[in-house]
Image (cartoon, rainbow over all chains, first blue to last red; front, side, top):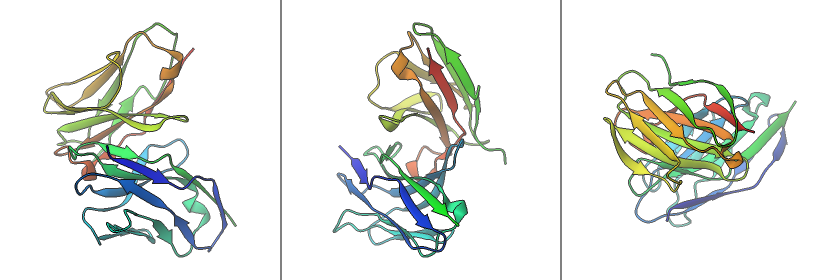
Length: 112
Length: 113
């Protein structure tokens, strides 16, 4: 079945550093890919998405490109802020297209 | 537009009891999905309802059940609670059930003692 593997955390960075969180997937067909963010004590917020190969999702300075040839959807940001500290989840849609399959999550901690 | 609301936000139950959690979707959304989040297993899909019908189901035992009402509000029930059911239960709504349109609520934190 479909599955997601993302890099283990925690990731600790200084403010204005470059961020990469790796995500690879296994899937049949052509799933949609997502990055969600969870701030402490809150639910999940959709950060960005891509629905087909070579699509680039972007939001709030974060970017990720749907790479079918490497089955990857790595999250990047050029300059992180303290307010970006959160848990980031990579996800893909299941074969039915109605459920999300999540990675284990990567905790990002940014210090000033 | 109001977001997805879940009640209660926190709940403590005893092993063997049953519990019902409630989710009110965004106005106009007809699909509600439920997820379980635990430190060990991460985020796992429970089930999805669309127009009062269960359309998709994850790999959970029959103790976990749900339903959706005509106003799209949804409830999930867990019977015969086990310690391992302690988790954050998240509800998500979407207009048509497509995964890329899901909006999540803040969750209900269930603790089983």
